[in-house]
Image (tube, rainbow, N blue to C red; front, side):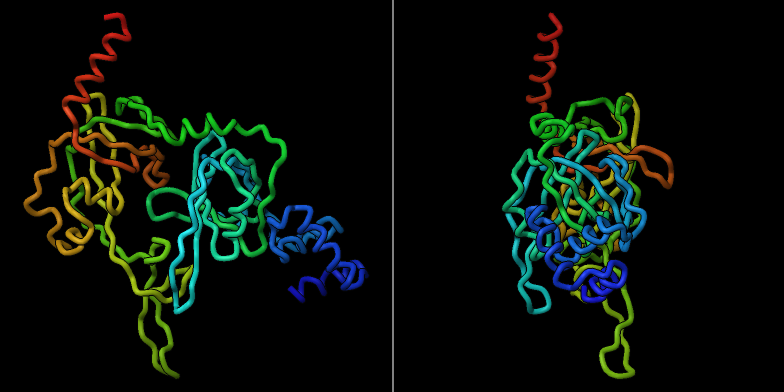
Length: 338
C-alpha cells in the first residue's frame, strides 16, 4: 500500500496527506464497499494513472468460466445467507455466501473474513457492481466469484438488470423438461433413467473449509527437510476431506445427456452416504442396481467446453413418486381441455 501511494506521489506531485484524503473520500463515496487499496487504485485512475491490471472484462454471468483473474460484473442480489464461522490454523474465520443473478444466470459470491461486513449493506434485490473480482470453480460444477485484494463492490442506485421477482423465479423454480429440449443455462427437472454409469472412480481431496480441490505440494517442515502436504490456494496447508463425483448417461426416451452428480448428490443417487462412498473406494460400483432405474433429477445444463456437448449438473436427485406423477399428468390433461 505504501508503495502504491509513493507511485501516485511520484506521478502527480501531490502530498501524501492529499492522497490519503482522496482515498478516504473515495471509500465514503462508495459506502465503504471498497478496500483502502482498492480506493487508492480508483483514485489513481481518476488522476490519469493506470496502475491496475489493464484487462478487466465486463461480463454477464452466463459468460463466466473459472480462472478469470480480474473482471467487472453487474448483478442483483437474489439471496444472502447467514455468515458461517469456523477455525483454521488456530484462528477464527468466517464466510458468507450470496447468490447473484443478472438474467443470464446465477452464481455464488463468497465473502471472507472482513468482507463479511459488506453483508449488512446487501438485501435481496440490491443491484451491485463487482470491481476487480475473480472467478473459480466452486467444486460443484458451478462458478464462484470472489473479490480480489484490489477489488471492491459498488451499490448501484439505478440498473437495467431484471427485477428481483424475475430473478428469484428463475433461480428457485426448475422447469420440467424433456431431455431433447434441454438448452445451455436451463434450470431443469427431468424424469429419466440411468442408462450408463462411468465406472472410473473419481475420488479426490478437497479443502474442508471451502470445498475447493487441493493440490499436493512439497513443503519444508524443517531446514533442508521437505514433505508432501495438501494445500488449498485460499487456506494453505489443510487436512484434506475426501469426496467424489459420479457421472453417467440418463435417458427419458426423447434423448439422452451426460449427467454429473457431485458429492452428496452422487451419494443420494447411489443410495448411500458420503462416508459409505469413501469406505467403498476401489469397489464403489460393485453390487449396485442403479442402471435402468428412473429418477427425478434437478440441475442446471451447461456446455462442456472440452467435449463441446451439453451436460446436466445435478443439484437434487430423488426417486420417482408414482402418485405425484399421476396427479401431474391429470392436471396437464385437464389444463389442455381433456
